[in-house]
Image 1 (tube, rainbow, N blue to C red):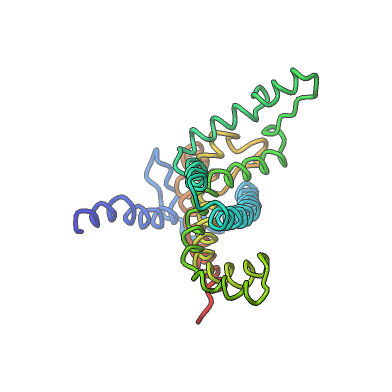
Image 2 (image 1 turned 90 degrees about the horizontal axis):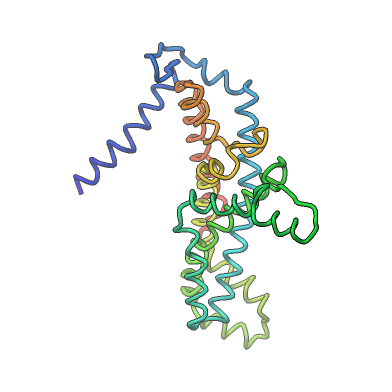
Length: 275
């Protein structure tokens, strides 16, 4: 295990501590920084770019996480109960493909479909209808990116839920059916409690992935229009690698790390039930 641990230490843990150190300086990549204390941290809460990115990230998370959680559970329940055959296996494979595809490729394809000169607008123009640039308006761009993130992630969570549903004893469903319980009551009182551990994994992972979204935003909208889709990670990229404010970008990254860690702990406490 030692070689793998050394690689993990060098490539993951060391940069985390370096980021924390840089967050207390005005390091700019081009020149060595000087220690500035907590100036970067106090600055960000009065920075409209940071507050806008935080708001966008929260909205993006509130749209994508519930939709992909509910969608994955419904799809997994349907496949486990009605399509435990070759068709169900094929469907699970198809649903899983977007989760293993590169987000850069997925974002490029969807931009070609939904952009101003995309396939969707070409079809609308060909039918004599008014074209609609979904990625060119603030509200529709954020909704579109959120729904595409759901499309990309839901297959991964379907697999998790599907495995959890298969672990629920079949005798519970048989006994409830003898007592007159229908499909909805079985889902509410047997399936949903039975996959509570899977729900914790799905919600926590989905939240973390939502707060880390970058490549999909970068390819599809570039944070626009007008910063409407600029998430925290995209803002960190702009601060550090476009404006060369690496110290400030590091401070935002540390705040993001602490925020994601705190949210994950709270979610785990709220969603995990004791026996």
